[in-house]
Image (cartoon, rainbow over all chains, first blue to last red; front, side):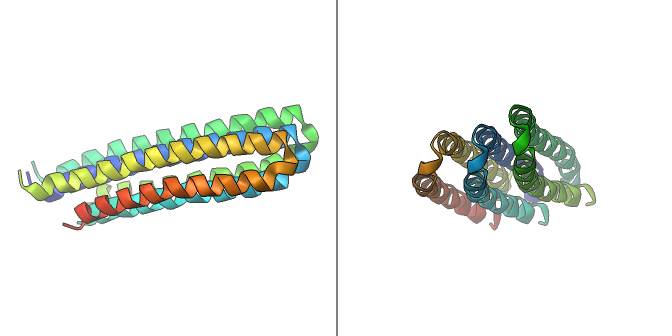
Length: 75
Length: 75
Length: 75
């Protein structure tokens, strides 16, 4: 089997796993943000700011992971 | 086995895993948004704004992951 | 099978596992930060600072893990 064959396989499966990770993480923290906004509507602005910061940190890891998969996919 | 064979396999499996991840994440946060809006109808606007921001972040990761699968599929 | 073949496979799967780990970790602590901000809106600033510090520590480990996957991917 040629190396590029496994590179392609890894790119596809890796992209999928990265998406699962990022989605579960952002989904979990955003769900709590929604529930918090509902409980204290006057804190919705503060909660949203925190939510965006935390989601951006997960997004950063996920995009770097997808860049690695991208490099494998274009071999 | 030729490399493109595994690329096709990975494109299909990867696209499926990406969809699972994004769906679970967006489904989870949107469910909480619905429950929050129901509990505090006057905060529905704030909650909807937060929901769209968080869902868009998951959507960004998922679409990039699908682009990688697309690259594998057209080899 | 050539060594680079497994290096590619490891890069893709490794990037995915790193993303899962970092996302679940940051998602979990950020979710608690949201709930805490909602319960005590006047402590939202303190909670956010703690959240960013903790999330940055997870981010540091995750980025180093992704750099290792990156090195495998460009072999």
